[in-house]
Length: 364
Image (tube, rainbow, N blue to C red; front, side, top):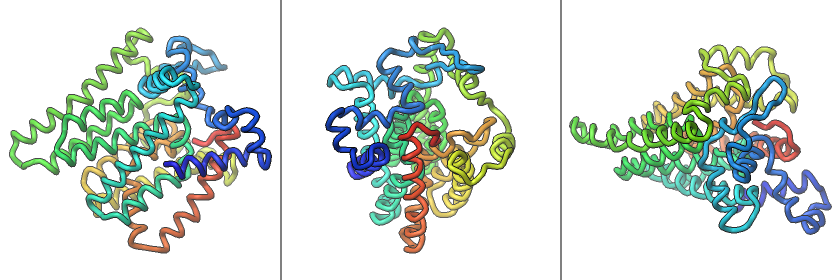
């Protein structure tokens, strides 16, 4: 995490300020962190500073932007860290996501090492950190926190602690609502690691279900109390980007019409399509070589990404599909040429999207 933080920060500062980077940061230390406050990060910072209600209704052309599109855990943690330390909400956000990324990396390493050994574990973590949209692991976005919560939920399930696993999924849902779907592959993992007798299985599934139920109830109470409606999130998503539930071919058709061009402007759209293809291939691979729950998780992610009218942000959400990186780590450990090829593709792409994001452009 420290290496990732240092390298990404150095690239951002050099990209923005060039040879004057040290002088600029020396004169204004906040210049070192301002490049991370774009798009959703701006909203997370604003909510942490002013609360959800202050940003509940903002007219922007044909759309109505609302803080109801976000969940409370990340901005809540940012607010607490900021209040406790006296640093800005943005700095607090970077502290929270950096800590979350460290936890996620440790958890992913342990999870892979259980089944495939240390070399594959190291490669899985490396592939996560050099993924093209890894910029969102360093910005105040929900993805690092969700990843840490879900990875450790699977570790808890492997340790036969279904209650803790369920509570972590419930917490993940209050960080990013779609994470509630991770309860499905966790249930598969529970059935895989539990006695075949019906009573132990029912007991494990009942304990596992407590966390997701509390997460959904907590979100409903939160949205009802703050916005006057427990399902306000769904309406906010439609207002925000016009995203609605639809058949898978609708999102794919919209992504291909017009066909994205090989240009910087369309790079994020192309990567969304590539990630859908990667998830499909990884699901097949996981079904053959990985744990059944991993294949189910990838399939669930694939369904979520392709069941709306747009694939927008699929490449960012793919960061939480950790079995994809396990599959990559296993294959890369077996094939040296694949390690070289992956690095040759991912590193330049990660650098490009980091540059785009730090300059205020759309990177996913």
